[in-house]
Length: 245
Length: 214
Ligand SMILES: Nc1ncnc2c1ncn2[C@@H]1O[C@H](COP(=O)(O)OP(=O)(O)O)[C@@H](O)[C@H]1O
Ligand SMILES: [Mg+2]
Image (cartoon, rainbow over all chains, first blue to last red; front, top):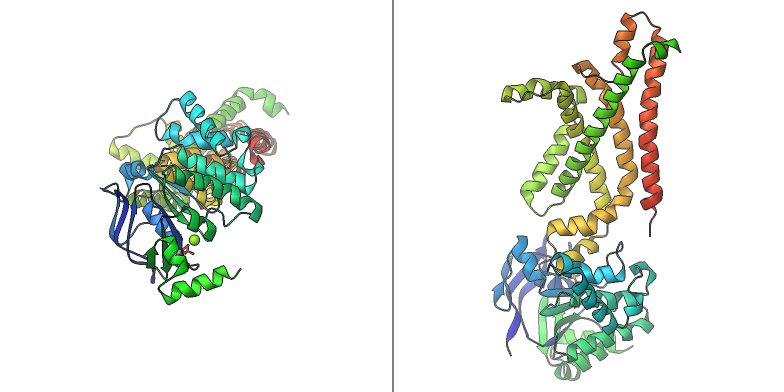
């Protein structure tokens, strides 16, 4: 498989806290990698460094073989190739749903307005929200906002999507509508890195499960292997806690 | 009353002088203040340094001192300008430091996730600031910027001591001509009141229109 995202020997500190320890991770094109692990183990930080929302101290991060630069326009361009979906949705509060989806194609890609709008409406249709296009984010439910956020990321035609606990802020009845959209993307061949505790999604949609603890990747295996026969004590312990309920 | 009617021309010139100073200095202060606020939150350390120094120097220098510095300092570098322009520069730069801080605190009220979402979509720092962060900071910034511009209007009185035609300095002429000091000042105060109330009204309108949106 052609590697799309590659991390080699990546280290990151917050002050004295060693948040990412010597991370090596390869995500192939079209692959779906689910990242799980206890709170504070560095999962969000992992997503954020792939998108350079945070810098790293050592190691390399490449996207389709290209190194991520540290700052500036070049970084912005490469960043546009990787979409990010946040736990808190982060839709632009002062813009309508449609404007949220159109903004980056207009500003970053310099698309014509009618083209960007047609595409945005297509994407909203795809996540089942074409009828909400004129509303503001605050008028939507959490599940609807998160689906708009996915459409907004897709509007840039990214090579890969990062999801940082996309359903953790949602009421239970809204989780499945978001997971359904994600499952569909996975089927269509989108490269995805998904931080989630939704084990059902991990089992059914993931090619690999990466288990993190204390800033390290402890296991990196198929869902089948990971869930039925975890190797490390930390993974066993973690699974016994979350699978109990 | 006859202080006003007999010296209408003088008052009028003074009033218009203060109005000009206020308008031009406000425009300069707003433009510089927003740019400096952008500098202060920029990812580039050098820009942040410039923004921080700008605010530190201008906000902590007495305005009169700044007028002297401009009037005596700039000509040394061969910059010769009309007094009124010097005054606009001094007032505008001085006030921009306060505008900068008001805008920066407005920026801080916008959740970090907004900027992160914009950056993750590939927007540059300038695009993120201009299309996502500042528009959302705008409504919290309206009231403090209004107060700052009212202060600017009153501060413009200092320009009178530097040979600029403005409202307060009319009292000197009136005094020489033997008019009552009390009444001279009443009419001068009224002139300032008209200007500051107008600024107030403008910003009240903007707050009603945009301040409570959403
Ligand atoms: N901006 C930050 N400054 C300081 N410490 C941070 C920051 N962000 C995260 N951390 C710390 O880094 C560790 C890993 O955080 P995170 O990646 O968010 O973990 P996870 O997403 O797995 O819960 C935690 O201990 C967290 O407190
Ligand atoms: Mg997290």
